[in-house]
Length: 148
Image (cartoon, rainbow, N blue to C red):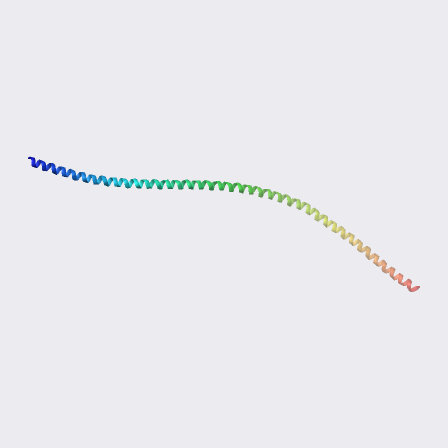
């Protein structure tokens, strides 16, 4: 092999290496662009994940608030139930008291009315007898006046 052939061969090899290096550089640049794109997408995913975490935390807090409000409502309901039970007991006692007292008073009023009716009947009978006697006396008085 002579010097010119050797130089040509070396030049071809160098050209081939230069072209390969250029292809590799382009591929490397392409990989870097893709890596940058992936990094941006990863950052975007991280931000979205953080947003979701914040929303999840917010939902957890709201759920805790709702649980507290539900507990409060349950306590209030229990308080109302106790108050209603006390009111029912009072009403029952009042009903029993009213039944006992009112029934006794109604009986007393009925007895008083019956007694008053008896008294009224006696008074009426007495008045009828007095009227009859007055009538007899009027007749006697009228006949005595005629005789005189």
